[in-house]
Length: 308
Image (cartoon, rainbow, N blue to C red):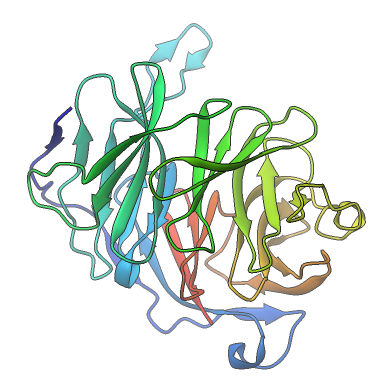
């Protein structure tokens, strides 16, 4: 199926602000060079409220929006799936939106840090993995379209630690490790039936998964749930919105609890530090860590960049 691209949208109200902003840091000492908290270096404001986000080379932002629903008998109705991915360069230059034809829907977005953009696409009742380059003009075709054999509907994608690998969060309880060609390398079944919605993996192969309800789950490399983590400070958090993991094994958690919206924990679930910034007024809806350990948080239209 062909991929269509719309015209450049004039007047995108995209702003790059807060250059050189410093984060107010609590519970942690020293600079980021010695393992301390990352610093807020800049903020973006997107022209639209974003639903899903991925970060490409140089801070390029890829994001999806859900179309606004109409008015129902009980008030405003929620938006539905989207067939579009929008892109804005780190220097505030908007790109052409990537639009999928027909009934194709974008379910997930991820990048690999090496110039590839991965879209989880629902088409004809099946989930597929479509691969694009990070830059395009008015028209382009996917470099690859790979069928996926998943145990449930695709919820999200995140990058694996091994080159060319991705993790897919599926259905109500599954985490699937995918090879670059879309084949399944491993399937892990989580306990319970709460939908997995974001996650990350550390260098040792431990998975950290945020679900629609309940605590963050840590899955060890052998596929078992870590009982020690289940008793930790990280697992005690309520109202968790997102989780991501950097190459040093720091587990970043966005949660609306106790007036602190962004925290980092170690592999045992012990608190390493809180990150507090005046600009960060709510828990981010999404977190992304790049291969260079730059942390990004998404709060509606606002994107926050934290650098080591």
